[in-house]
Image: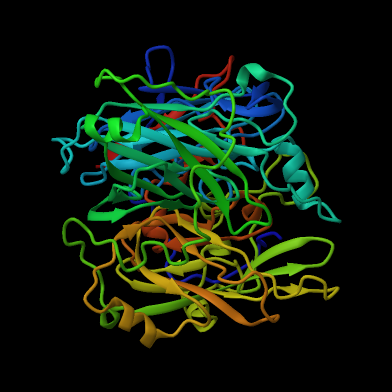
Length: 601
């Protein structure tokens, strides 16, 4: 389950550094724009106690709002005694500087216990939209997370009377460490289904409750006759979510993963881990409310493509501006009868339906320079390993404590280019993956078509063979043109037929559906296609965003560009980034020495 260190000859080593930048001392004279503290506490959630990883002592963490075109410094304190932390800025394709993407397998050493790190971000022009941040270590992202909004510089293209956040999470009774250790153990100890959904941090547990004070439904307030922008964030770990509003069916999708779209009407919202949508919500009029005879409506949330359906609720509450007499619903219990009969999984939800608000330079099939197949399959014995082209990439290198992680790939490149820069020709000859480093190299200017094809799983014992699952695939550092997906085996002619007359939107997280629970071993069932203009150099992860699958190896690392593209700043200037706990990491006794990468501009 490890990426291996092997010697490889390279095509384009960087003979000399392109730039030299002087480190800045981030002492008391330096003031970060935002400060986050990651802790681990035993708190009550939905009526049950759990050891939980938190950001700024809240669940979810605070909503961050940043402008376009301005460098933002975010200081992250790891106040956990015995675990590493990073923060990934999910969906900010061009915002993270080389060591600020927050991926410990690829771009940075994690923040050691009782240290802090200053992340440097810049949201480029045209990236206004809905994002979020989360830890990228182990299972921490299930709770160490919060919304991140890039604000429109001159007003959004759609006029609304306000906005509301719907932040979706799950929670378990086990701790992050217990879940991670169980997933990596032999025999496997599966996490099980979540004990409930969190909607804006609140829930009523579907597990035993010992603390009634936290058994509560989240309440979202609106006013009659107004139009709101609802920002939905799928900050989930495992489940595909299906959500509906009682007696409301008037949503219009206007944004997907930070990209504005033409309005598209939907009655229900289906959202996977890592995905975000904005929708126009048209509140009922006073006349509508009087006809219904109510001011409170349930929001119903259910899991899909899981072994068991987990259901939770929130309350949509209208301000009583209509002088009605209406009894509010109790927020300390779930409804006795589900108000909605939600359908099964909507396979292909919004595929070939969303259109960009503005032309987005979508590449045609004729522009594609290379196709890479990513064959996805689970291998089962007494363990589960998720493979991509028979490779896996996982966080732990060995049985050492979590505070001694394996070397991030970008660090390895800086330390020894000749050993770690992948061989492009060998990779092309091997279907896209460099056989010596296990990475996927790409040249700046290429137009790639990436095909995800799922195969029925392999089982050594024979039990459970042919298993499939649904996977939300996420790309760091790049947004992809979502070319859609379908059942069975991928076929390029089918793709072009479905694309006719369509212009796909740019996304960073899209769904590879399972369509069936089981098929024959090695049978093809379910595909997804991306097209990418390779423009952003760096070391980037492309992985399934289901946390359990990530821990079980369902991740790939892409190396975009030659050494001169990636290693723009000379090694002497970045030495502090190349050591675990190096001098770019501050603590009570050490002031960090930090490179300001925005000085390259």
